[in-house]
Image (tube, rainbow, N blue to C red; front, side):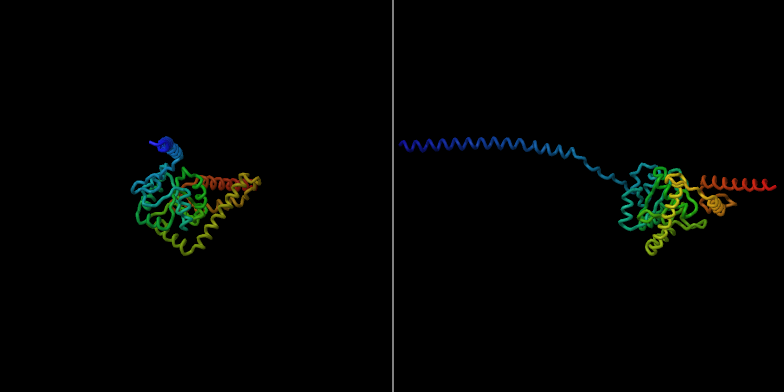
Length: 302
């Protein structure tokens, strides 16, 4: 074999060894990358697992409404009504605004007898529930759980009707202004009261056909409530300017209460009647004071 051919064979052998060396290095590098990939994936999985996961909404049993997820005993008593009840909250209020529907607010408590009567007569009745669901956003409130809501709308009911009690039934605009209110409404008309379904029909028609009247009424009630709150704040010294209430206002209030007093059966107004301690105390105190003043004037002139 010639010398030139030997040199060529040596070059080929060296090139082959160099190629094998580079291949081994590439394989080692590739092997290293294969090991690192699952580590990166594991780290990413750990990071995702560490992130908070939004809890899924609890499932509602068949035949139940949203109140099944509440903790209030009173609200749970209404959890299987066919009424599409909401608890007081942003979900219900947002829906009323979005759908431009009035709100039917029903307030009561677990030990209230007439609350249970109205539930049995109306809220468990499928046709009545359908009228409520079709025309209103229905909100149920436990007065023992949300005393703030109860206090606000009880003032409105007393302002509109002259009396209050539970169950309290108030109809509100989507911006929460009351335009009609009362207490217990029967399934059938009686004692001069309309049936609950008659009331639902009348108010849904008024909202649809006489919106301006409804908004005017709600605005008037709201303004009167603001005036009452302002007077209460002044009398309690919250505004820094204590204002004495005129005695003739007190006398006029007592006279108005006595005008609606039922001298035969007792209580104020028509049935259903609920005792109001502050009204009884005030009328008794005012009349005793006036009787004492009158007797003093007589004895002073005798």
